[in-house]
Length: 301
Image (cartoon, rainbow, N blue to C red; front, side, top):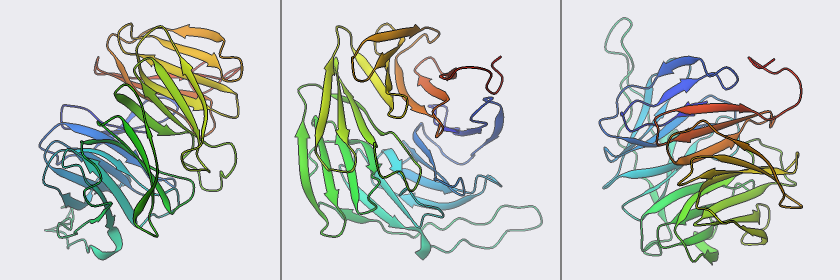
């Protein structure tokens, strides 16, 4: 599990126990986004220091420094093993795709010293001039050719990388707080959901059919984030003002549980690939793990 933080130090942790594994050192500004590739061979981070960085999670080495003209708010790998591309978005209002295979990592400076990361990669911009506001989230869909962006102009857009153009857009009436895919596993071609939290409404889209809204659910409280486990038929919301997690049945929309523990808005959340653990990240400076299965699991009895 990779985490981002405003203290400039993204971390790698055990996804079941939460134990600290290591810290990725090098950013000089708040880190707004962090991602692991599907197979765990690469990690990526986006920062207020105007860079995205690609890391080796085994050694902690920085492999690529991807320079931008403004704050990088989001990074995304395609859902595949040993990915060769990274998508980025941020305050410069540009969706960029970087080909990591073109950047060569330099030699080590000496015994035990890290290798010199590549820093000359130029990202290809997709949809030049279309985004009119900073991009908050980039999601690489199950279909490798489709990317989704969520921007501060309250619009979710789907992009066809083959044609390098937008193929669908959906505009909300409130600011988009989060936008996430329900899987990061290659081969999940059915039942995959793209979920978005905006104001007091959550939207659920069919991730295999760009722009197809399956359901929207309204609440009487402000939602900061949402995650769905399609296999279990449940989704969870993170509170913006009350800081609670609420668990719902997807079909009936009935509230099943309330989980308390955070002391700030819950900005992000994601289920583990097996759906047994939910990870949440909050303005209170903590990442918390919550068991979402029956019986013993990890450190839970």
